[in-house]
Length: 284
Image 1 (cartoon, rainbow, N blue to C red):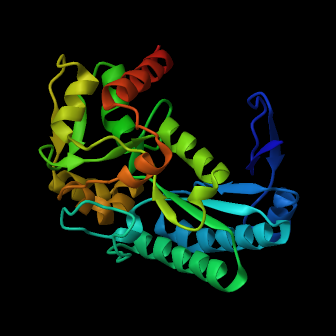
Image 2 (cartoon, one colour; image 1 turned 60 degrees about the horizontal axis):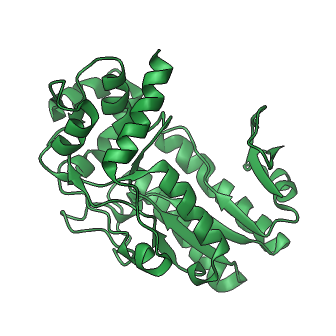
Image 3 (cartoon, rainbow, N blue to C red; image 1 turned 90 degrees about the horizontal axis):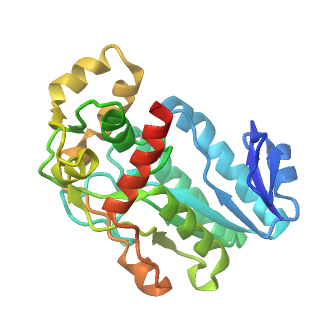
């Protein structure tokens, strides 16, 4: 049985998937959802605010850990790269130190320490899957989808933040799902962190050219424009501390996963084309 746990379960789940209503912020609700599980995938999404992350993420992870330990389940935790902090352009690997340079990264680092403690002191069966920035069909919270894919789908010039000449890795959402499935079912994955399959980084200019097919001009957002936007828009305000990801090379190395499991990431041309088809269909 595959359960999809959410506070608001889908009314039209995929075939073979059982929707389960649960609030993972509540210990009893989380325990009920995890009862009888063999593997739990924690891919929870929260509002993009430091306040929400500080308030809810540690509680959710603690409840998931307790529920997995009670059920005897393996926990596959989906993470991003915020806890690495600035890397000064050095490629990110699984051995990159955890040195957050943002408030959101500090929350992520605290949660990783909590997970390490649960593994080392309580015997939690833990595997971590980490992705870079992401994009993909219907990925509504993806910066690349919002600034490039969705704009091209409505005939607008695609945009990039700050320096479009720098390389910047983005992970395709179907590759994230497939990679997490491997981590939960292959015993070779147990007990460590893996970078999920991500194609070699292109520059912002190259991504925008793929998205537009060369038919539309490209634009870049200046730091000044973002700072101005932060005065009026909470999304820009919350994103400002992560701006460093677009002012230095942002290169995510997933070669360890690819070698170990024989999995190749989706080429950007293919992933961007699929994302455009979905966005264009939605735009009508």
